Length: 130
Picture 1 (spheres, rainbow, N blue to C red):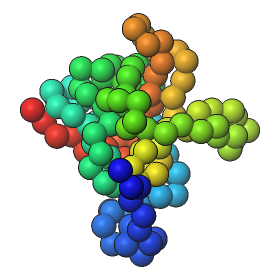
Picture 2: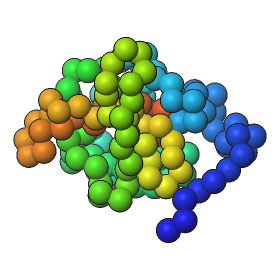
Picture 3: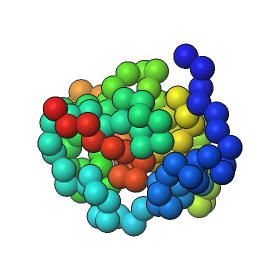
């Protein structure tokens, strides 16, 4: 599947300011401020930028970190990861594989069965409820 490519003007026209800041400028929402931090309704979380299915609600859990947390992505093809060395830290950034939008970061401190915690900005997500 070809990746979505749009101009910055097109992204700005389609996304609200917070979505644009997070998805296109690699921003981070304040902890405990996001819409989906404490939402546990059944459904599929999709990229707010392009609609790609990213996470299932069954893999969401309350990590206490202040952002929606998941222990697994919907599929290996849904996300891309790369090393992020900003802010004096070494982390693994998570991006939508389809549009390249910044989602958040993944850490090696999650629950079984994967042991990872995808810490994702609410502004990068939309919940398609079942």
